[in-house]
Amino acid sequence: MIPPKPEPRADKVSLWGHLRAFRRDILSAQPARLYRAWMAEFRTPFFESYLCNDPALVRRVLDERPADFPKSRRVTEGLLPLLGRSVFVTNGAEWLHQRRIIDPAFEGGRVKEAFPAIWAACEAAVARMAVGEVDVELAASHAAADVIFRTLFSIPIEDRVAQAVFHAFRAYQRSAPILNLGAFVPLPAWVPRLHRRAALRSARAIRRLIEGLTAERAAAVAAGLAPPDLATKIMTTPDPVTGVPFATAEMVDQVAIFFLAGHETSASALAWALYLLATHPEAQARVAAEAAGLRPEFGVVGSLRFTRDVFREALRLYPPVPMLVRETTMPEEFRGRMVKPGAQVVISPWHLHRHERLWDRPDDFDPDRWAGEVPQGGYLPFSRGPRVCPGAGFAMLEGTLLLAHLVRAFRFEALPGRVPVPVAHLTVRAKDGIWLRVTRR
Image 1 (cartoon, helix red, strand yellow):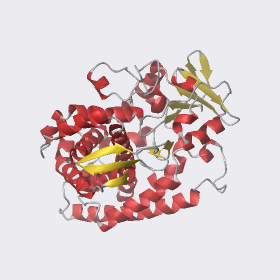
Image 2: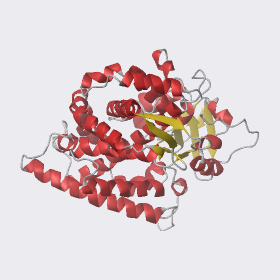
Image 3: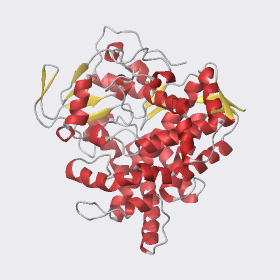
Image 4: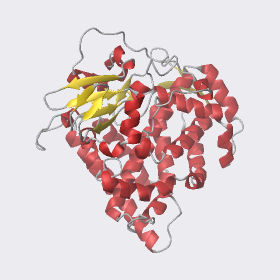
């Protein structure tokens, strides 16, 4: 079942209480009125924050004037030790330089070239899947990490370095929630933050391992021996404006975000998709029937329409990144209210995807809704506008194929009394994992 939204509450919710509850349980933390409101305002002694659900405001911030609403450092502060100056945290000219190099690696033709590696990772995920009562969130993490390593560095997850990165990243995921409360208060750097030491240790371990992989690849590129994977493509692509490619240190930052974005978000969406199918056996049977015709050809993806729509619906109900935070750089008017420079603008896929004025039956799992009209501005699992995730097409291909492979081979059933509670870590995860009964078909 999908946990219900809370009943309307008469009391006011403070920003601090709201953020703390958000980390514990996203659904119960949200006042029901936020799923109908076009805008909500939070005030603190340090800054103003506006939750914007109005599609016109979403378009202004993400599509029409993105340069006037740069990414806020408040939420990304806790990720800097891992991501450095990656494309996820930068703004302005630095971000444009990075996107000009990265985007060509994820164009349609390049995604097609990655298909054999993704297929191999899907087969490995099937071979690795246990039966009995299984935490499919962990299985999904393993599968998504395998896809990233095979497509980025041409190595499977069983590789020694890949295994070390995977385990270090799981430690980082547990110690660095995306909502770092300390980032919302202008504290000196020496003031301790929650989980700061554990997160720093994990981030340093990950970066050391990525530095080794990147240095090896740079040497292989120089010797003309590098495989034609994503790492090689990105490392050898110069900025078409400046003619300058990424330096090795810059490449480490970008690999870190590729792993975060490509592994964390895909794993989250896949695990929730398996849970939704376990609680909706009729939909699961349709996916299994559709997947019966799987074959290792890129064109097979076009026949997986319902499976793709299941994955889309999972991204709607459980968007891996629950909120996007931008910052105003000049005075603005939001729905008749004057907003000062430096205010935080929150675009929340979590609220937009379940908004009662935008979606019919917003809390229902209904993959068939994607065969008709869907609300404009109400769906942004990969963000939108110039800052849309460059790997969105890659993620949809990966998620659809992994889901089809796993459901073709296994039956997933919900366990009584084990309803997963969504919480906000680096992505929307389950508080104690997503446990399902898995049997072979």
